[in-house]
Image 1 (cartoon, rainbow, N blue to C red):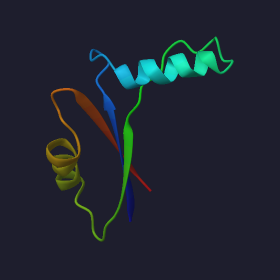
Image 2 (image 1 turned 90 degrees about the vertical axis):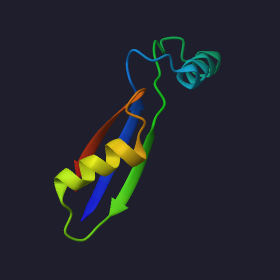
Image 3 (image 1 turned 30 degrees about the vertical axis):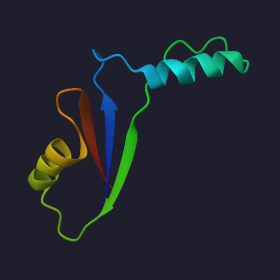
Image 4 (image 1 turned 90 degrees about the horizontal axis):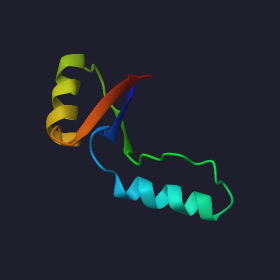
Length: 75
């Protein structure tokens, strides 16, 4: 089974990397770019995944719960 974990900065946290990307997009001809958030995607292939255990690992290992949110997508 493949599992994707999407980790993004919380909405209340300033994302300076997203601001830099937004400004670069505007500079390259996309003036309508209003907001950009930059995160990461981790793809994991596992056998017999326990959903609760995956949430524990995503919360404790793959993200920083103080400043980031995560989402798990099962494929």
